[in-house]
Image 1: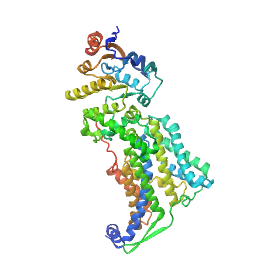
Image 2: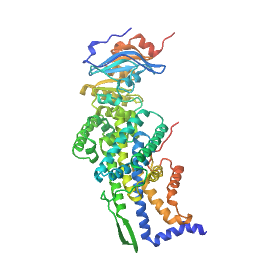
Image 3: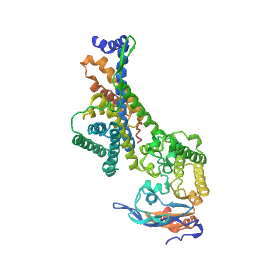
Image 4: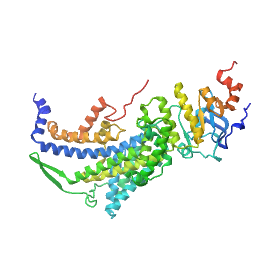
Length: 318
Length: 266
């Protein structure tokens, strides 16, 4: 009985008793949720347009952030370094389309998936070769990202908001909003959705698949750059960042691989869920819940709703 | 014997010429030494029994396949090996036998997608939906609304096309092709699976497009009544070879065509 009380009653009582702590946990969950959503968005962009699950998305986050910090360390002014890092992602997109996608077009999905593994290890090696393997500090000040914290008295307690977290949430939300509008309202966005629906029909109306692939990989690269700056500012720029990027996987399983709103909501659910789980239920199992809870949630979804919250339901006609 | 072309029905110059085209996939020959032409502003039908190579022919013309032998001349220029999106930009639009639409997009967006090749504003303006991109979007939207009025599909403007009945999907697909303002419109069985009323509507649209805008149309169709009514000239394929070419009247009375369709006692 004691264990049931601890699992089902005590955490909620605690939430009610200390609402300020609940708000604090929710806020932290939301911030990491928005960032997960941003990383997941990079996967969705590429998956929609080319049906490729891009395993290299995580390393692209690291690579983009490394390029930015690496250039700055070599004496390039911060904002120029930012532009150059964005251009590097454009070059990467062109190269990937030319060297990886184009020769492998019409191959089975698993082949393209394996090719993105190759790309991952290439980027790890290439990044280490140029910028070295040591962890670096994100250049938060040079990019004028705010520092410090605001403490608000509320609900009989104190809630802390890191300015950096606020900036991360705002910038990521703007980025997600821009991408959503771009996808639904513009010619290129329409072409992207067209390609996602039918390659054959897209070709027949004069949409070039190669051009679209460059655009989506570039967009995914820009998303990776923003995600890299934000995560980098929170936990340093190193190759271990790509482990965080793998959190996008449960986000995608939750939200559906083809849905932009799904990536956003999935990201928020995972972000908030793991923070709440860690804080209220973590002590029951000795902590560390945060590292695996997302995958357990994803597993449950796979059992009961494999297409995710917003994914297209696949109906096989016989 | 080759049925003679009837010059009376030539409304204009040769828009597209197919010369001695063969197409093989490994050991299988889909087309063997096929030659015919499509003239400006005519309706040209391609008919033949199942597996005769009609769709393969269309796929060659719009660049999905590249002929293993022979050449295709479009607007007087021999076509290099080209990909379908390049053919589309060159003025060739098409529809598909089994409807290839963007199923999750609305009717309006589907037809706007057909308008892509006419739009030129750059990535930057697009991103912020301002300046030239916005003006362009509005102008093209007007054109697309005209097509929607013409095809009488105003009521399904916002419906995702995947939810529409088959007959309407075919109509949207035609609309998307028309949005490209093509010089040559390829229709692969535009009336397959339709009931009589839908067939009559579709026939009317095809004729009106041809007459009002002078669009050249090449169509594959199984309904002989439709073919005889619509087309100016007919080319008949069987087992990848051309067996007849000429006006509907000439083709209809050609013994080889009758044999191909009805079978012949061996």
